[in-house]
Length: 145
Image (cartoon, rainbow, N blue to C red):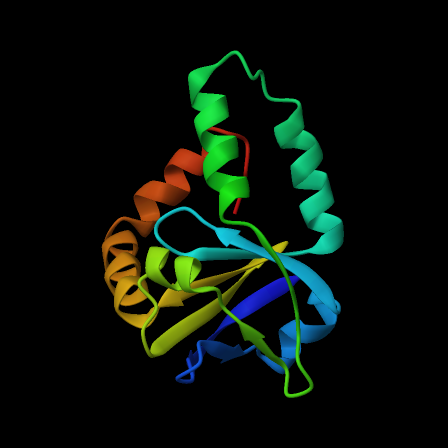
């Protein structure tokens, strides 16, 4: 399980150090793709295969399903850590997530998210204002926090 928040920087070549606490959970090969809310999602290979199976079962006759699958898979890249525990983020994913220099890496249970520091701070401030409202809505779907 991934949890926590870490701040790092991209190097000039677009490489990012993965926090050591996340490396074992990711394994040597993993998948990174466009996430929601302008961040990147990083999945261990086992988790990616589960998601892939679920997405294959979406009805391809539905335009929304086709659009989401295209979005999700078109940005997907299989990655591996180098000897220093870094990953090279492809330029298309860096552009999508507005990653320039300062980056926030967060653990979100079964995945890691990579955010631009600026985008993360803006998102966090907006969501914190209604944290109680969000928690209340989650009770409607039978999640007790």
